[in-house]
Length: 388
Image (cartoon, rainbow, N blue to C red; front, side, top):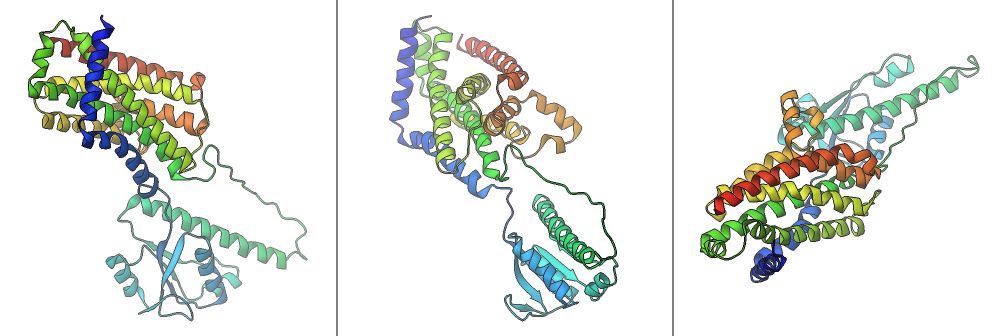
């Protein structure tokens, strides 16, 4: 193997990249743009929930409950059905109005407090209220339902405490259970802390797979690949010369994303950065191998682009990046074991959020290494045969 020939091919790739300013802008700017999109737009934090209230009881107790919802910081009271003394605009009262607001998408949630709510509380009976959610977006509705349960539970505990305080003269001691919640790894429950590691994974997958496949197919389209074949350059030297530039570009994009994540989004890396880059190099075996494979089955750059996305899209969807694997059907869960991105996502989130070391992550790293070597070996063999 002649490293001088390999370095000349690497230099040629960087020269071609420099002569294509649009591609260079995509390579450097797209990862940062993608991070901002996922950091701000694609978030599981649900706030400013448009809320409508239909208060038939109009008592001090019902007003206190409504105040609890508003002060939670999640619910924005936009409609007080029947009109209210302050704040939100009036709207015709009644159940039909609730239906109309939800049908038009003007409210995400409607809270109906029936007559007798305060009277039931005063007599020691269970007071009921109805909460209607827009379930079009099931994920958002589930999060809102959790917020509602928390507010109602807090209000209920306060009512019970006040009643016990009034009866303290008759009851000396009462047993109770106090649950204290403690969140590890992501105490503020910010979705950006969960998203940034995933963006690093997708960037490495997309950039290295697509650029590797396009670079080789482009040589075939303009006729220079045949010229390279008749030179003394061997197939494996050509393969290394074509892949090394995109390894360096992939690592450069990782540095950019980590820098923006740490400096702008204040994401803390709990584990070893060196271990992160070392295992990222293992993951690159799979993405570069897939890029080589795509280049052998595509004749044009358009075909290479479409084939790459046909491979990458299921990888992203089934890796656990956006949707929990545990919620998928059992058959689909078994399919995810063949996706390298699944293991790398577990590794990188473990390093970022939990500070895990190799003593914890070695099973995922071992499987990732086996998949990478297998994919790279098969793709390199097919690439060499195609050149031959």
